[in-house]
Image (cartoon, rainbow, N blue to C red; front, side):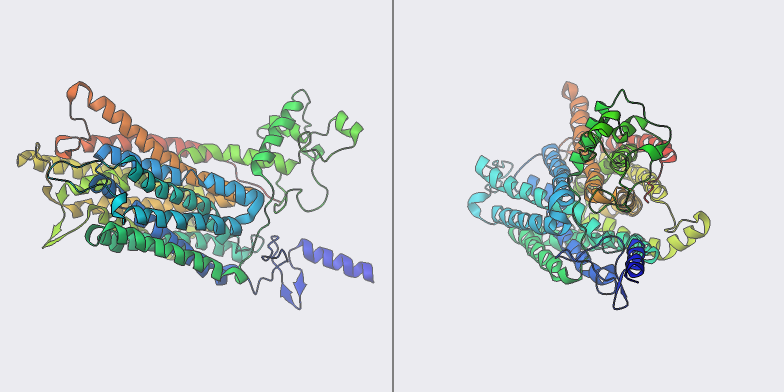
Length: 585
């Protein structure tokens, strides 16, 4: 009788339906903060998400409160030129999307997502306070301009400013790959109903990001331009404190995934083991490759992955050689890896071409905080007696996202589901492809606006005058609105793709890789700016992007990005057609 009861409990556990007093446990290995299994009815799902979405909303308000108008602070307060300021902004933004690799490795390997968010949020808050001091304490700011002479900031003033700025880069980067993944962890991947809700979570997660960005691009930018930069940086710092409080408030409701060990170590083990067995023939029958015999993977927090036929050279890492049989030691992963471990590396390699095509899209997105703002500063920004800060126009990007997310989730998905048969309407790859196409249109719109602006400047004899052209700044609205539409499709599609297609124990790392495209896109934008400036200013020419944009050809820069985006989309379509989906047991 006892053996029958044990067998029943085992079967229930294997199907993810182990129960306590009639209540169902999660089937994906989720635990509470103390490491105990969690009940579905009391944890996770949408009941835990308000705290996570609130955290993200306030954190993004803090981040965009700095990023949206940073180019203006550098030019107006630190007295940098247009190209230097744009380069500093894109380099810093790129770093913000490079540091997620640090947070991701720590989260997946050692700390788990919860504690990683806690640690890096603290660093973030310290950076925000340092930046606020640099804009508030008189000794830490350069003197105001005297006529046309603007004294540069001292090394010490630059030092404090950039210390705060790059502490923010470390802090925001550390939590970026963890917050979206931690939110998705609240939905049981083995439950079809919760799996559908998880797709909706990514949409509303991005919606929360843009609510924070909306407040930043309106209220915070206005405060910076009219009430002072100390207050303009101080308010975002307060919201970062609120973000930390919101996150810890939901602790009792969260579901946690155990860290599975270093993903970088596991990948290196596969490469080393396959190299050691380079002369060994991989069997035609994949069932002969090494894998644990029980239901669960040898990797903590991961399901088993089914064998795939490509990249068979890596399969050699899972071949049980004669030497392995003689020693009887199957526990050294530097000599023998499981099929699941090998497939983890294969998945990352398959993802790489899709990942790489996100870089050019990110370079287009970077123009919102640089070239779009600089274009807006030489347009008519007046509404009656009120002058609109050029960076405020990014509000229309945010409004676009806030408009499209509920439309997409409530209307487009049900309609698309009828035609595609996809659970979420569009597949992640289809969704990203649509966004790439829209991004091309945004660059075309920006180029057309600039052509008209330069035409007016020539007609009114303003080419040699560094003054705004009487063309209303609201002509920029279409380009911002199109970038927002592209975001809803491409960036949210990336969140879904890199979470769903990643190995279970590498989800933070893969989220970081998706964010890395934004970093590299910013660096690519800086590189393009540098190359364009060097080539177009040769021979004493003013170039495409001089300090006086009326003498330049910013439209050519936008056309260049549109052309690169079109070539990138062609490559993406080819890669997406070749992509093979992950197969988990």
